[in-house]
Structures are given as structure tokens and as C-alpha cells.
Length: 624
Image 1 (cartoon, helix red, strand yellow):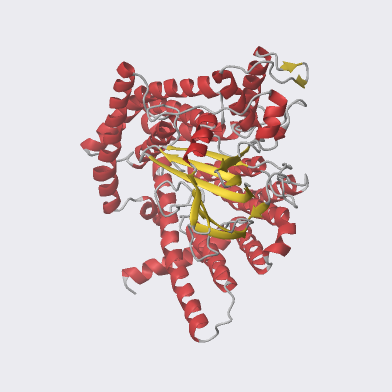
Image 2: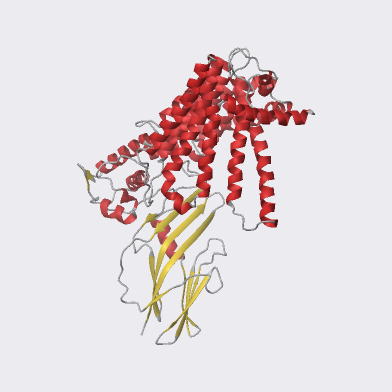
């Protein structure tokens, strides 16, 4: 048997051995796959009623698998008795059961407009934290005993196991799907597409067993020669990390240090969202690479291990400045909160790496786990704390305008200034979209609706106007999305309700309709100009082939953008009937256009503005 065949054989033998070494882990993974195949078998309309049950089972089996993996590794490497191994497996089963009961028994969360309950976002996040902590605990526990391993070697071994399982799983998936596709194409055409989903589920389970089976024997007192092989970095990986990735991260470090200097002398010019994305990637990637090159003895690797913590501390100081500016302007929100967590992790990691060097890895993992747990706690979590901060911000703004008296909202006597209106609008929009938030009785979640907002607060929703150099501009894209409110309107002065929809005449951009009037035949053209940049619609009306009215929507769109500047509102907002309609007239006709929705999207990087006006109805009257 050649080396390649032996390698493949060892992978599959490891997968089989995983059943014996980690029974609760493989058992939960198998149960996860079975639940998945049951969901595949049941069509969606019937499956929807069991959504909470299936999701709870999936989450619980995932917890049982990873928690059991960590517990068994701890029992094997530290104690290695039959009782300890049995206890570890039972703990994995107990974790799965407790997770299922915690998710399913409370009844889940019924989202607005949904018919059935689902696992809430907060509950799913809490289970996700359990999975993260369990997996990181496994990596730490696998780095034992110290004379055979450490965190850096265990960390790389886990990556190696993952990518080997991914490659084998991908090949098996591609081959088996190809065979199934050939059967469907050549032998049995009515074969259901669910067959491919079943194959994907089984291959996923098999790949997971390969992943688990790749790890060496962790039992106390045992020296598994496989561990040295599993932990050893191949030469191409050493070249990749040491001579390609380190220069890339060092180059990014230089860019960020230059940015700090520019910011110091010229002020903050970068978008907070761009900065947050770059900083997060730099932090996670920098720490990850620092772990991966722990044992490298090249001069470049040693230089990187020395310089990264120092450079990170300098960069973090200016990132804190950007974060504080963002919080000062818009209050604490989910994105700011997430960035703050990453910032704290990066700060502690940089200090620990500077002081403890390679011995800092396990404490850094402990900090990550602790902060992950903090993010899902009731008072200081990612949902609770931003909501509290935004509610305090809103209350302060309302009280300053005498708009909150006791537990009652009072419409503004006079329109507040621009900044106050923007603050109130922004805070209301955030709170109205917060899932399962505990809000005071005076706060109506319908305040996100433009009509309700104006009725209860006395002014229109007001959004900030961004410019291309503004730090708060998000990712180069701004937008306005407006909706027509429900209600009735007087159309007694109009004679015809004309429906104009593109495609019916064969054109995706132009709709055409004819109306027989007292003076002759009116032909109405509504051209959305979707084939052109921007897409400014145009209305043209002819009477017996004579042009009686032609008007584009430029003036109407200017009116909308002045009143509702493109910003970062996110969800569409409902405005007034007057905002969503426009009256046009000539010597022969009078027209009322009513729009279902209007969307304006701005790409500030490319300096492109796109308009979409969804026409609901055209009302036409003929002048005498």
C-alpha cells in the first residue's frame, strides 16, 4: 500500500474510531443529520408548524456534540477512568436535553406577521455562545500535556482537521451528486431533488466524523505518535504564513499607523463602518496569525511577534476615538456594541501578548469566552444595553422639547431643530426594530410608521444628510425607501382610474393604455426608463396623436429628496398620501399619479443615483 492509500485509509479509520472515542459527539451529530433529513422529507407548508421543534432539536444536538467533545477531551486527558468518561458522555447528553428544554418549553418567539413560533434571535445567540465556548474549551483541553503540545499546536491541529474533512467531504459530495445527477438525467427523470439534499446531509455527517476522527488519542499517560504528525505544519503552510501572510499583515499595520497619524493632525475622515470592518479583520487576523507563527524562528516571524502588540495598542487608541465619536453622535447601537467588544478583546490580547508572549494564548481565549457570555446576558447583552442606551437618548430628547410628560407622549408645540428631530427619528427607528425589547408603555412600535410618527410627535421623520467625507457614512451607500399609507382619498374630480403596468405591451420599461374620452382617444405612456442610468420616469399623454401633456418626475423626486434625504434609515418608512402623489395638468387634462413605493439609492463611491417609482394608479380627468 503506497503512502497516499495509507493516508486515505487512516482518515476513514479515524472516522470509524470517532464513534468509539466520542460516542455522545457522534451520536448527537447523527441525530442532527436525522432531524435534517426529516425536515427535507416534510414539505415547507407542513414543516412550518414544527419550525420551533426542529430548530430546538438542531440547536440542542449541536450543543450536545461540541459540549460532549470538550467534556470527553477533559476526562481523557486529565483523569482517564471509565467513570470519568461515562460522566463526560452523560454531561453531553444532559447539555443537549437542557438546551432543548430551554428553547422549546418557553414557546419560542412569534415574529410580527408570522403564524408560528420560532427560536428567538437572543436564544439562538445564547446557544451560539455555548457552542463557541465549548469549541474553544476543546482546543485548550487538547493542548495537554505540556510536554507534547501547547495551544498554538492544538489550534493548528484543529484547522488541519477541519480542512482535511472539508476537502474529503467536498470530493465525496461532488462525486455522489454527479452520480445522482447522471441517474436523474439518464435513467430516472422523475427523481426528486430531495435526493441531493439527502446526499448533502449524509456527506456532512461523514465529514464531521472525519474531522473528529483526525484528532489523536488524548488519553492520560498515552503517547500517540499521530499527535506529532497532526500538529506539524507542512512546509507550504510555513511558507504561506511566514513569507506571504506576515508581510501582508505588516503592510496593513503600516497603513493603519499612517491613518492614525493623518487622523491626529487632520481629524477623522474615514467612515466608521469602514474602519470597524478593517479593524475587526486586523484584530482577528493579527491575533490568529500570531498564534499560528508562535514557533517560527525566522527573523520576520520574530519581528512580527514583537511589533504586532505594540502597533495594535497605538491603532486601538485611535479606534477608541472613532468609537466614542460614533456613540456620541448616534448613541450605543448594535454595531457600536459589537465593535466595542472586539476593541476590548484586541486591547487585552495586545497587552497579554506583549507581557506573556506565547503564554498569553489561553488567557486570551478566556477573555473571548467571558466577553461572549457578557454579550448575551440580560442587562449588559447586545440586545439589552443598546436598547437601554437608545431609550435614554430618546427620553432625554423628548423631555428637552416637553414632548414626554409622565407616561404620555405630547406632540411638539413647535417643530424642534434639525439635530433634535434627527435624534428622535433615529432612536425611534432603532427601538421600533428591536426584537423582544422591553419598552415603556408610552412607546408605540408603530412610531416607525411615518403617519403615526407625525400624528404622535408633531413633525415628520427627519434623517441626517451625509456627505462623501463624513465619518458616519455607511459603506458608500445611502437610500430612501418610502411607502404609501393605508387609507382613503377623494378622487371625485377625476373620471378614469387608469392602470399602467410595464411588460403588458412587451416592454419592460414602458406601459401604455388608451382611454376613450369626449374629445377623442387619449393614449397614455408611462416610461420608467429602467434601461437608462438613474431611471427617471416620464409621463406622456396624446389626444388623437397630438401631444397634450409630457412631464418627467425630476421635480417630484427633488421634492422627495429635499424632504427625505437619503440616509441610513434601513427599513422602509410610511409617509403621507400627499408625499406619495403628484398632480400634473395641461390645457386639456388633469392627472393624479399615486405611487405604492418610491426607492432612491445612492452609490456615493461611484456617484450614481438610482430611482424606482412603483406606480399604483393614474387618475385622469378631461378638461372642457
